[in-house]
Length: 342
Ligand SMILES: Nc1ncnc2c1ncn2[C@@H]1O[C@H](COP(=O)(O)OP(=O)(O)OP(=O)(O)O)[C@@H](O)[C@H]1O
Image (cartoon, rainbow, N blue to C red; front, side, top):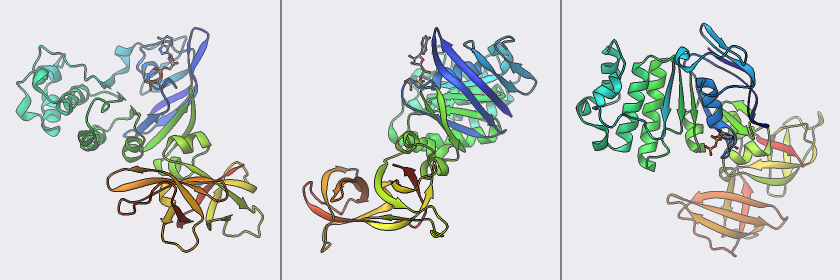
């Protein structure tokens, strides 16, 4: 188990990572997300032992690193995968993966598993981006790392490739049976690939939970907005025992709620685009379309309700409504929605 307690990193007088705490199970994949400059890469560098930490400890297997007793990178047995692949251009795929390896049987194993058998004798320049990233991963895993750090491994690849390669990487990490921390800018990638997600805000871990919990029950508005399209609808919530079903009352329907931060009375309900329906042929419209974004199979609408809340709703692409047109919006969800104090 990889265990991190109160890890803090300062650059000069500026604290960039503030008291990070986390524990990762043996084959667990943690996706680390957050806005640019929030400290994601700094955390990876600190865990790899590449930069000094100001406070706290990192513990794995038989070593513990603290500011007073720093364990150097070569003693940590960390595997790193970067967005720029970092392959040796003058070596073949096979030579890259076997670099400094005494026993090459694991190199063969990962080359085969990652579909690289036919490329063993070519140099990186003639490989596609996805193939290069597979080579980088094979090289990392062939060295039997105790844990793996991935810094935006897919950010240089096109959308279609990203989608398939993220599953290949997840599968390979699970087979390698090592804890992994994977930094990404892509919320969808974080939600679909991670066992858990850590959301960082200005060096502080705001939430560390399963993808489902981070998306449906974010513990702050920051996390709610960061994990996907989020609208906040004015609502009323009675937190007394009279409200046995935790019903939240809104102008566009009543739904079950999960109150956060002791929300009650006048509250804001977190509404995702798929929690709503939009009907332009309804006899009594309750809002006006502000804008629409065509997404291929769907369209995302921003609708200004007559009560002053703007909500975003995603509907089938067949549903073409123009900005300025009136429409009826209602809540259609049956699962509990997060309720924030206003
Ligand atoms: N060597 C350094 N010296 C001083 N400040 C640094 C150094 N490296 C990073 N920083 C600062 O530390 C903060 C965190 O940087 P970091 O690269 O960890 O962010 P990030 O979350 O990985 O960002 P991005 O998503 O843009 O890659 C930023 O404000 C950055 O400017």
